[in-house]
Picture (tube, rainbow, N blue to C red):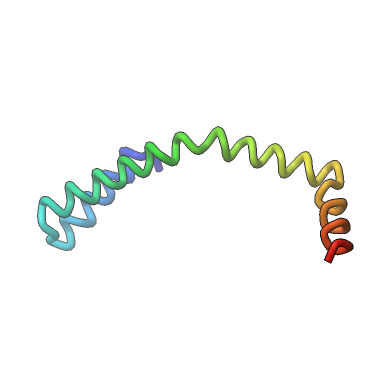
Length: 72
């Protein structure tokens, strides 16, 4: 489901619930802004995924856990 489909679905639901037109417009505007914001985060999320894959493969997490436990 892309952003346009999500907004259309939200509009359907707000109409089915007989909410005010201003409420529908506010909710749809919020959802559009949220989807735009999430779209800007995706490159960052991809970087985190690659870091997680690297740290698992290299054993970095185990190294970090051992040194954290020993310093306590």
